[in-house]
Image 1 (spheres, rainbow, N blue to C red):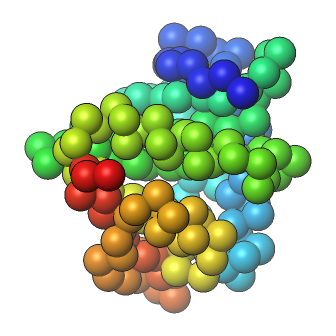
Image 2 (cartoon, rainbow, N blue to C red):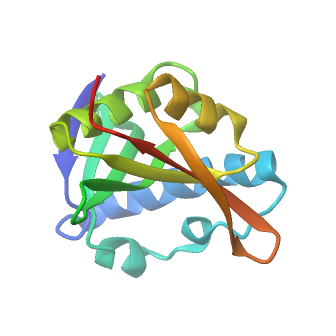
Image 3 (tube, one colour):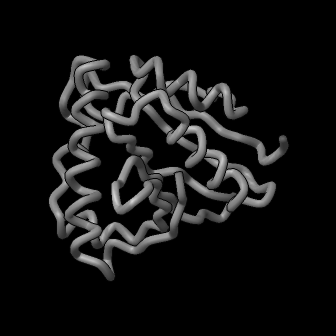
Length: 153
């Protein structure tokens, strides 16, 4: 699996593919957490392209198996979204994308949030060295867990 930096703001065809991937991945999370109010699940093409995120996509032979998007903060990097094609789940795509962002951070802290009841994502981040820092309610009844990787191995 190859990882490539891509910019959906500059590539509409890529943005269309990312939006489809994002919807498929967040539909799985919505089932896991029992709530479909995940903002990125309902994002439209214009919002995805205007999000101002840095993207890394995973795939082979033109197929898109996953993507991760983040933004730089004053303290490090904040992972805004990690999406994996449900057909590619549990094959290392998410781990590879998270590892690439940790390498991008070059020792700076990396933060992430995921659905409180999204056990597979929580395990993925814990396995990559993230430490959960707390829970918060982002919409009435919709809870996320925040986690941080301190930048060390």
